[in-house]
Image 1 (cartoon, rainbow, N blue to C red):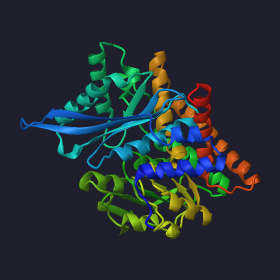
Image 2 (cartoon, one colour):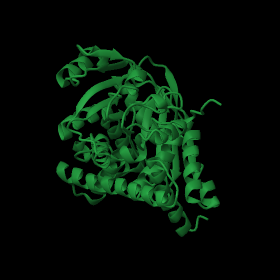
Image 3 (tube, rainbow, N blue to C red):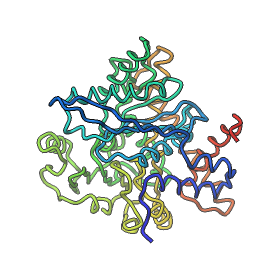
Image 4 (tube, one colour):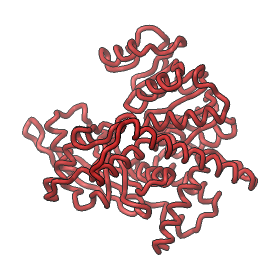
Length: 422
């Protein structure tokens, strides 16, 4: 039977497997299999040529038992409600695992930002907030940037919220803002930085010296590029491979930073890199490395290619890069696959810090932000490993993902129970 790659079906399967391991209350399980609220909106935008185009948008508030919904907004030509629902579910487990006072949410608009002018993007961004204004707020649902949305787009959204809600203090409704309008220091690279703290702990656990480690990064967007830069800066690691949507490059001497940045600037792709060996994304995933960092999109490691993964550690910096079938294969092959909703939780932790600073009107330095991020995400990693060991002592050999799910689900279910939801 072919593996189901529908992202929400995957999210539900992961939930079901963890619920069975922990013997989750059936009512709590039923509540957590579906989002609390799914909104579909239509946003009319007058385009530069004078025509009006109607864009379809979404916002899913998956669960708010532990606090306001929290999650990014994607502008993507292939956005679907099922993708948004899956991402909102994963955000619920992510905030719970990090033990921060948020629930999970996500949003998206079907559009191609590369074909839109700045004016059209601003109109779309403001239209999204006008359509959803009554359903978001600092204590209701706090959006943030995601794929193809930027700090500038967040600024427009924040300003539209201020205008439509008649407030001059709109800052804590949106995170991921520029620092000039009270964004947080350290937010730009917090997703990758958090991933590096997890990598440090995972490598220590597996006896891998990161100074001599060979690393491959799939994806050269914000998270992937920062993973490339930070792994070199923090650990002195050798990143030998990197890719984007057009393909990848392998340089066994280590990807040269100046040549990589030149390729991106002049050709728009890492494939313009001078030297090395050009490879496909599929080949990069299967390269012989110590650490593989999937930083692109969902469903990259599946039941079809999981047996070909040669890395000792898979660090899931993207959302949903490993499918349930692949998860089982990696676990059986003793490849240490560290789950996405731990690895990339630095982004939402950084957003939490921004929200707290906005509410208090008191702001931290970059070094303070990094120290607090390190503390929270390292604690989460240690709790995941402690839960794995506890389950192992009970005769249950589970993957890191399953252990992380057990922690996250238990916290959300307990909050629902205490609030009288079941």
